[in-house]
Image 1 (cartoon, rainbow, N blue to C red):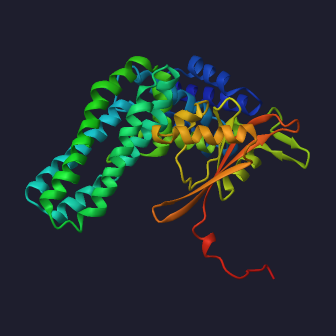
Image 2: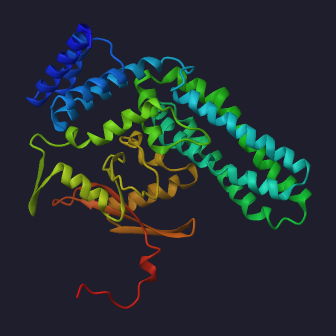
Length: 391
């Protein structure tokens, strides 16, 4: 190891030890930039491995992960000044669009040949459109709303739902279509036209407006949260994978109250314990405050409805497609006024029965605090009969 590499390793080691003694992550990042300077993720990983080999504990080295993540965020953020960067969300959206266009072009070709089997297969291939549209609704739209640009969530979300319904209908009716010409004219051609038209609207209107209005830090957050939702038709940027793993692994260390505990009348629970308990419950929870803005949602592994951190602070009326907004606000008003203690709905989603309940939340003085949404897949519960006892 040359002297400069050895010096850098010692400086990194010094920062890790300072972190272990209570130095904040932000201060450690500042020291890193000043003392160590520009360093690649690979170099950091090599230094970490050498320190482990020399006997430094895994727990000590892990304290560097959050600093590593912040440094990586900084380098990513510098790439978010133009959509041509390969990790920019708009670049990735457009890559997805190029794949969508290949499928719609193939659909047109199969339709010309009246190849029903090929049409059915290609319609199945369009299914990841759901991911593409969900990322817009749950990530891009909330950030645009913060800039006062409400049009997409009011208009484009409705068009998404039209396309979803058209695709579902096309899939349901393709195998039994006896009149191919009629199926093509009434079902397939309008779907292709809407899907291709949405690409035009995105690339000529939505994305240019978003580039103009959103800041590099907004795009970085969209990139990070988008990687959790996944990608449609393409693989995501590999450089983000390591960052997301580190952020998830170290989430608990960065979350909580001053002493890391919450005191309830019925007990004292660590913030990390409470977070895991809430995420383990067999229900999805979303809490909307008295100001009608989303305050919290649980993060179970099998969430039924997608939530992203971008929705925190978002008005609840903007969290739903235009067609259902009036009903949502009626429910909230019913609960706020006390006319109803709870309101429930149940839906059939992909063959599963989903039970959704809304509760008005009030404090001891009967002041309204907000609305709690609880969603549960009750398919298996509905099958229960008799008893199953512990003994």
